[in-house]
Image (cartoon, rainbow, N blue to C red; front, side, top):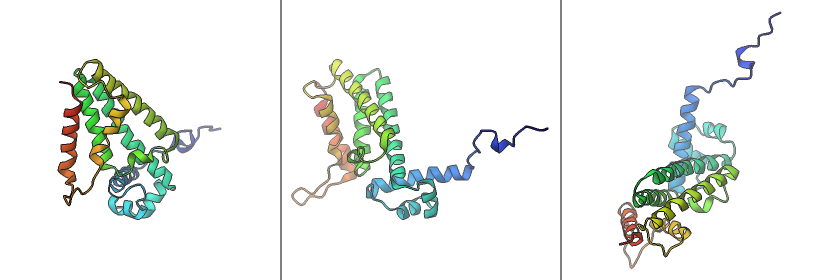
Length: 197
């Protein structure tokens, strides 16, 4: 008697079709862009339009909004964690700090409501990534302080809060903000003010 099971039932998952993988990547990338532009309340229709797929594709991949938001936040945090590891690998502590500070600042500026959403969305995976990133960021900051490259009169939490400054937009005395130029200008001023000497 032949006891061999068919390939599809031998305990190995069926491979995901290449086009399905491409669609999943497009949906996630589009969701990131849409969240960056419109915040976490962006509609599935907007995400589908941005991805160039039907709205049904978005729903099939992420039946619940929380699943989609968790995927977006996890994707962003993964990038920032990678940046933090690169920062720690830099021989020059100031160069590493500048890399991470700039990455955090630009991600915060480009992703509406990111920081304020970490506790409300994503569940345990995002919470774990958030804690990992905080630990890495603290190491990057304190290493730069220990090497005398970063001012020591600020706690690491205060330094991290400063990464939100470039995201602040507004009109001052009738002068509209120039976000494209403004983010980099504020970053330059902040880094100059944080550097010792």
